[in-house]
Length: 171
Image 1 (tube, rainbow, N blue to C red):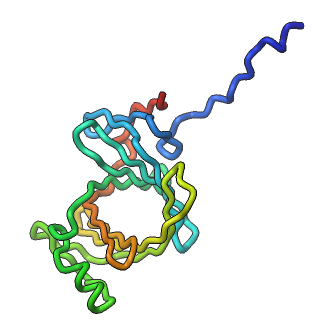
Image 2 (image 1 turned 30 degrees about the vertical axis):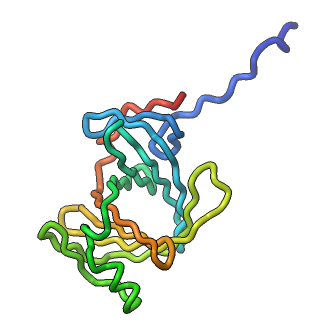
Image 3 (image 1 turned 90 degrees about the horizontal axis):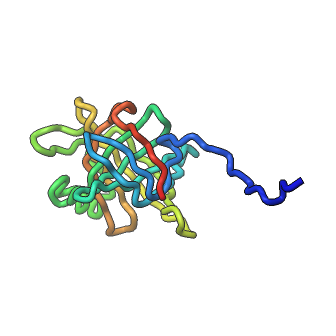
């Protein structure tokens, strides 16, 4: 009889690494991290990935999720320190080196991807090209090109999905 006074309840959605929201927290590397921003990528083969910008209050990392089995953790790096000649070589010759040497490790070019990127909450999409260079320890250097002269570098590694836990929704 008085059903119209009851609040309509939203369905409960299980929080997973694939559906985190801004403000959500997670545990990684014995630290609590807060999701600050969310980015969606659509790659040339129509695959999608989602990246979370996370912070523990001191450091900023990026957690890339293609699916719950494939997790990559990266940290921003200055391209001039990571791959000092990369940008100039691409600008001068329109070619990408097959290998990068960083901290005495050889990283081999394994993937070149073209895609579109959108920050959650923004209207438009931006184009990018990403190159992945891997060593034999599941570590990589990702270099992204955002425009003719704008390049970014990230140092990263593949992580075990079980290294992320205690997912809590944002406020």
